[in-house]
Image 1 (tube, rainbow, N blue to C red):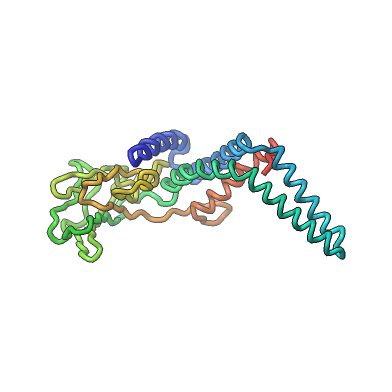
Image 2 (image 1 turned 120 degrees about the vertical axis):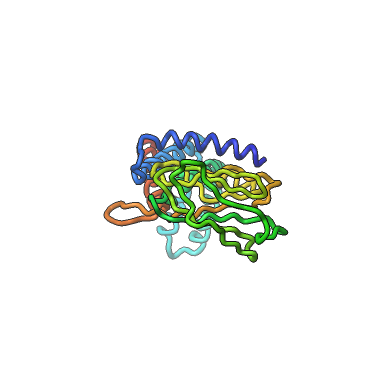
Length: 279
Protein backbone atom coordinates (compact mmCIF):
# COMPACT_ATOMS: atom_id res chain seq x y z
CA UNK A 1 0.00 0.00 0.00
CA UNK A 2 2.81 2.38 0.89
CA UNK A 3 4.56 1.77 -2.44
CA UNK A 4 1.34 2.44 -4.38
CA UNK A 5 0.78 5.70 -2.50
CA UNK A 6 4.42 6.69 -3.04
CA UNK A 7 4.09 6.10 -6.80
CA UNK A 8 0.81 8.05 -6.88
CA UNK A 9 2.40 10.92 -4.94
CA UNK A 10 5.39 10.95 -7.29
CA UNK A 11 3.10 11.37 -10.31
CA UNK A 12 1.08 14.17 -8.67
CA UNK A 13 4.33 15.87 -7.60
CA UNK A 14 5.66 15.88 -11.18
CA UNK A 15 2.40 17.38 -12.43
CA UNK A 16 2.59 20.18 -9.86
CA UNK A 17 6.27 20.75 -10.70
CA UNK A 18 5.19 21.46 -14.28
CA UNK A 19 2.34 23.73 -13.15
CA UNK A 20 4.63 25.94 -11.04
CA UNK A 21 7.37 26.28 -13.66
CA UNK A 22 5.89 29.40 -15.34
CA UNK A 23 5.95 31.32 -12.05
CA UNK A 24 9.66 30.86 -11.38
CA UNK A 25 10.70 32.83 -8.31
CA UNK A 26 7.28 34.50 -7.93
CA UNK A 27 6.04 32.30 -5.13
CA UNK A 28 3.04 34.46 -4.21
CA UNK A 29 1.74 34.37 -7.77
CA UNK A 30 2.26 30.63 -7.92
CA UNK A 31 0.36 30.08 -4.68
CA UNK A 32 -2.57 32.24 -5.81
CA UNK A 33 -2.74 30.57 -9.23
CA UNK A 34 -2.61 27.02 -7.84
CA UNK A 35 -5.24 27.89 -5.23
CA UNK A 36 -7.58 29.36 -7.83
CA UNK A 37 -7.08 26.39 -10.16
CA UNK A 38 -7.80 24.02 -7.28
CA UNK A 39 -11.02 25.83 -6.39
CA UNK A 40 -12.20 25.95 -9.99
CA UNK A 41 -11.30 22.34 -10.69
CA UNK A 42 -13.04 21.00 -7.59
CA UNK A 43 -16.16 23.05 -8.37
CA UNK A 44 -16.32 21.61 -11.89
CA UNK A 45 -15.81 18.12 -10.49
CA UNK A 46 -18.64 18.66 -8.01
CA UNK A 47 -20.90 19.84 -10.84
CA UNK A 48 -20.11 16.72 -12.87
CA UNK A 49 -20.89 14.40 -9.96
CA UNK A 50 -23.86 16.12 -8.34
CA UNK A 51 -27.54 15.68 -9.21
CA UNK A 52 -28.21 19.39 -9.49
CA UNK A 53 -31.92 18.99 -10.23
CA UNK A 54 -32.43 17.03 -7.00
CA UNK A 55 -30.35 19.54 -5.04
CA UNK A 56 -32.43 22.42 -6.35
CA UNK A 57 -35.67 20.60 -5.47
CA UNK A 58 -34.59 20.01 -1.87
CA UNK A 59 -33.46 23.63 -1.55
CA UNK A 60 -36.82 24.89 -2.83
CA UNK A 61 -38.69 22.66 -0.38
CA UNK A 62 -36.54 23.97 2.47
CA UNK A 63 -37.18 27.59 1.46
CA UNK A 64 -40.91 26.92 1.24
CA UNK A 65 -40.97 25.47 4.76
CA UNK A 66 -39.06 28.46 6.14
CA UNK A 67 -41.50 30.86 4.44
CA UNK A 68 -44.39 28.83 5.88
CA UNK A 69 -43.03 29.36 9.41
CA UNK A 70 -42.83 33.12 8.79
CA UNK A 71 -46.36 33.32 7.37
CA UNK A 72 -48.00 31.60 10.33
CA UNK A 73 -46.02 32.72 13.40
CA UNK A 74 -49.06 32.29 15.72
CA UNK A 75 -50.07 28.78 14.65
CA UNK A 76 -47.99 26.36 16.69
CA UNK A 77 -49.19 23.29 14.79
CA UNK A 78 -48.24 24.74 11.41
CA UNK A 79 -44.89 25.94 12.74
CA UNK A 80 -44.04 22.48 14.09
CA UNK A 81 -45.17 20.88 10.82
CA UNK A 82 -43.13 23.34 8.77
CA UNK A 83 -40.11 22.83 11.00
CA UNK A 84 -40.35 19.08 10.56
CA UNK A 85 -40.59 19.57 6.81
CA UNK A 86 -37.53 21.83 6.81
CA UNK A 87 -35.52 19.25 8.76
CA UNK A 88 -36.67 16.52 6.36
CA UNK A 89 -35.66 18.69 3.39
CA UNK A 90 -32.20 19.18 4.90
CA UNK A 91 -31.90 15.43 5.34
CA UNK A 92 -32.83 14.93 1.69
CA UNK A 93 -30.23 17.53 0.69
CA UNK A 94 -27.52 15.73 2.66
CA UNK A 95 -28.42 12.41 1.02
CA UNK A 96 -28.22 13.96 -2.44
CA UNK A 97 -25.09 16.07 -1.87
CA UNK A 98 -23.09 13.77 0.42
CA UNK A 99 -21.58 11.58 -2.31
CA UNK A 100 -20.18 14.36 -4.56
CA UNK A 101 -19.00 16.33 -1.52
CA UNK A 102 -17.16 13.28 -0.15
CA UNK A 103 -15.53 12.50 -3.51
CA UNK A 104 -14.44 16.13 -3.96
CA UNK A 105 -13.05 16.22 -0.41
CA UNK A 106 -11.00 13.05 -0.95
CA UNK A 107 -9.60 14.33 -4.24
CA UNK A 108 -8.81 17.69 -2.63
CA UNK A 109 -6.51 16.08 -0.04
CA UNK A 110 -3.49 15.42 -2.34
CA UNK A 111 -3.93 18.89 -3.91
CA UNK A 112 -3.86 20.50 -0.47
CA UNK A 113 -0.80 18.46 0.56
CA UNK A 114 1.08 19.40 -2.61
CA UNK A 115 0.45 23.11 -2.12
CA UNK A 116 1.31 22.90 1.59
CA UNK A 117 4.62 21.19 0.80
CA UNK A 118 5.60 24.03 -1.54
CA UNK A 119 4.32 27.14 0.20
CA UNK A 120 3.95 26.49 3.95
CA UNK A 121 7.72 26.94 4.37
CA UNK A 122 10.22 29.04 2.50
CA UNK A 123 13.61 27.90 1.18
CA UNK A 124 16.72 28.79 3.11
CA UNK A 125 18.62 31.95 2.28
CA UNK A 126 22.28 31.84 1.36
CA UNK A 127 24.41 31.49 4.51
CA UNK A 128 21.29 30.85 6.61
CA UNK A 129 21.64 28.01 9.09
CA UNK A 130 19.22 25.21 9.87
CA UNK A 131 19.06 22.00 11.90
CA UNK A 132 18.98 18.52 10.40
CA UNK A 133 17.72 15.89 12.85
CA UNK A 134 17.72 12.12 12.55
CA UNK A 135 15.54 10.16 14.99
CA UNK A 136 16.50 6.54 15.55
CA UNK A 137 14.15 3.67 16.16
CA UNK A 138 13.45 2.50 19.73
CA UNK A 139 16.12 0.29 21.24
CA UNK A 140 19.07 2.04 19.59
CA UNK A 141 21.58 3.99 21.66
CA UNK A 142 22.18 7.34 20.01
CA UNK A 143 25.44 7.73 21.93
CA UNK A 144 27.03 4.75 20.21
CA UNK A 145 25.32 4.52 16.81
CA UNK A 146 27.87 5.48 14.10
CA UNK A 147 26.44 8.37 12.05
CA UNK A 148 27.56 11.43 10.15
CA UNK A 149 26.20 14.09 7.85
CA UNK A 150 28.18 14.87 4.72
CA UNK A 151 27.95 16.73 1.42
CA UNK A 152 29.09 15.80 -2.09
CA UNK A 153 32.46 17.17 -3.13
CA UNK A 154 32.34 20.66 -4.57
CA UNK A 155 28.96 21.43 -3.03
CA UNK A 156 28.36 24.96 -1.76
CA UNK A 157 26.60 23.73 1.38
CA UNK A 158 28.85 23.46 4.38
CA UNK A 159 28.37 21.82 7.74
CA UNK A 160 28.72 24.35 10.52
CA UNK A 161 30.08 21.94 13.10
CA UNK A 162 31.96 18.69 12.81
CA UNK A 163 30.30 17.09 15.83
CA UNK A 164 26.65 16.24 16.25
CA UNK A 165 24.36 16.86 19.22
CA UNK A 166 22.88 13.62 20.57
CA UNK A 167 19.76 13.44 22.75
CA UNK A 168 19.28 9.97 24.26
CA UNK A 169 15.81 10.74 25.69
CA UNK A 170 14.34 11.50 22.27
CA UNK A 171 16.72 9.22 20.31
CA UNK A 172 17.73 12.17 18.14
CA UNK A 173 21.00 13.18 16.50
CA UNK A 174 21.15 16.76 15.20
CA UNK A 175 23.53 18.74 13.00
CA UNK A 176 23.66 22.46 12.30
CA UNK A 177 24.06 23.26 8.62
CA UNK A 178 24.64 26.48 6.66
CA UNK A 179 23.00 26.79 3.24
CA UNK A 180 24.45 27.88 -0.06
CA UNK A 181 22.46 29.36 -2.93
CA UNK A 182 20.72 26.38 -4.53
CA UNK A 183 19.00 23.04 -3.95
CA UNK A 184 21.75 20.54 -3.12
CA UNK A 185 21.89 16.98 -1.79
CA UNK A 186 23.26 16.00 1.59
CA UNK A 187 24.14 12.49 2.71
CA UNK A 188 23.18 11.09 6.08
CA UNK A 189 25.18 7.97 6.89
CA UNK A 190 24.00 5.62 9.65
CA UNK A 191 25.65 2.23 10.21
CA UNK A 192 27.48 2.74 6.91
CA UNK A 193 24.26 3.13 4.89
CA UNK A 194 23.77 6.44 3.10
CA UNK A 195 20.47 8.32 2.87
CA UNK A 196 20.40 11.26 0.46
CA UNK A 197 18.09 14.23 0.98
CA UNK A 198 17.86 17.65 -0.60
CA UNK A 199 18.52 20.82 1.33
CA UNK A 200 16.48 23.52 -0.37
CA UNK A 201 17.74 27.08 -0.85
CA UNK A 202 16.22 27.74 -4.25
CA UNK A 203 13.21 30.04 -4.32
CA UNK A 204 11.07 28.22 -6.84
CA UNK A 205 7.78 26.39 -6.47
CA UNK A 206 9.16 22.91 -6.02
CA UNK A 207 8.35 20.91 -2.91
CA UNK A 208 10.34 21.68 0.22
CA UNK A 209 10.86 18.33 1.90
CA UNK A 210 11.10 18.95 5.63
CA UNK A 211 10.27 15.54 7.11
CA UNK A 212 10.28 11.86 6.21
CA UNK A 213 9.12 9.02 8.43
CA UNK A 214 9.63 5.29 8.14
CA UNK A 215 6.80 2.76 8.35
CA UNK A 216 4.17 5.38 7.61
CA UNK A 217 1.50 4.69 4.97
CA UNK A 218 0.12 8.19 5.42
CA UNK A 219 3.66 9.54 5.11
CA UNK A 220 3.84 8.12 1.58
CA UNK A 221 1.21 10.70 0.68
CA UNK A 222 2.31 13.62 2.87
CA UNK A 223 6.12 13.45 3.10
CA UNK A 224 6.80 15.08 -0.27
CA UNK A 225 10.27 16.07 -1.38
CA UNK A 226 12.07 13.46 0.74
CA UNK A 227 12.95 9.91 -0.36
CA UNK A 228 11.37 6.91 1.30
CA UNK A 229 12.99 5.41 4.40
CA UNK A 230 12.82 1.64 4.25
CA UNK A 231 11.19 -0.32 7.07
CA UNK A 232 14.48 -2.09 7.96
CA UNK A 233 16.32 1.22 8.34
CA UNK A 234 17.60 2.23 11.80
CA UNK A 235 16.01 5.63 11.13
CA UNK A 236 12.54 6.47 12.35
CA UNK A 237 12.50 9.91 10.74
CA UNK A 238 14.61 12.70 9.28
CA UNK A 239 13.64 16.34 9.78
CA UNK A 240 15.02 19.54 8.24
CA UNK A 241 13.90 22.81 9.82
CA UNK A 242 12.70 25.43 7.35
CA UNK A 243 11.27 28.85 8.27
CA UNK A 244 7.51 29.35 7.95
CA UNK A 245 6.58 31.40 4.89
CA UNK A 246 4.42 34.52 4.69
CA UNK A 247 3.05 36.24 1.61
CA UNK A 248 2.42 39.93 0.90
CA UNK A 249 -1.16 40.42 -0.27
CA UNK A 250 -3.40 43.51 -0.06
CA UNK A 251 -0.66 45.30 1.87
CA UNK A 252 -0.47 42.67 4.60
CA UNK A 253 1.65 39.60 5.27
CA UNK A 254 -0.50 36.48 5.31
CA UNK A 255 0.09 32.82 6.01
CA UNK A 256 -0.02 30.45 3.07
CA UNK A 257 -3.24 28.92 4.42
CA UNK A 258 -5.12 32.22 4.33
CA UNK A 259 -3.90 32.98 0.80
CA UNK A 260 -4.87 29.45 -0.22
CA UNK A 261 -8.36 29.85 1.25
CA UNK A 262 -8.93 33.19 -0.51
CA UNK A 263 -7.61 31.90 -3.82
CA UNK A 264 -9.70 28.73 -3.61
CA UNK A 265 -12.89 30.69 -2.90
CA UNK A 266 -12.27 33.03 -5.84
CA UNK A 267 -11.43 30.11 -8.11
CA UNK A 268 -14.56 28.22 -7.04
CA UNK A 269 -16.83 31.26 -7.36
CA UNK A 270 -16.06 31.92 -11.04
CA UNK A 271 -17.36 28.61 -12.51
CA UNK A 272 -20.09 28.48 -9.87
CA UNK A 273 -21.50 31.81 -11.09
CA UNK A 274 -20.90 31.25 -14.81
CA UNK A 275 -22.37 27.73 -14.83
CA UNK A 276 -24.91 28.29 -12.03
CA UNK A 277 -23.64 25.36 -10.01
CA UNK A 278 -26.15 24.24 -7.39
CA UNK A 279 -24.42 23.87 -4.04
